[in-house]
Length: 90
Image 1: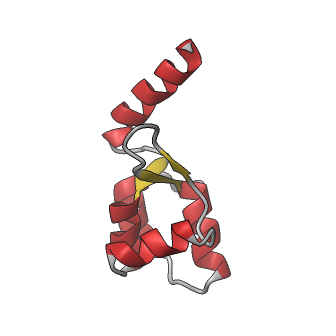
Image 2 (image 1 turned 90 degrees about the vertical axis):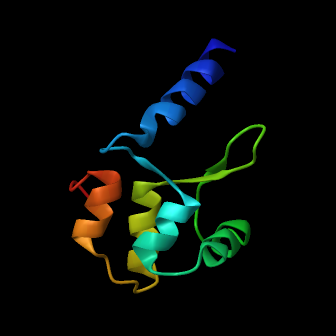
């Protein structure tokens, strides 16, 4: 149980620049699509991630997003992605 609490604490505090996890809304902005489109990708298993316990909110790791964008020929805007992820080691 302590591991779960630690994970949830980290995810909540991941809002700072440099985080490795994105919300579906952030993914929508990065991919320049509607929020609902990202939800559909996620729900169909096209975009990998996980749901938060309780709320069911979707979270997408940056590395999964980058892989998804490359596989689907979605242009990667490095400056926009780094604004959310702060991670240039992709």
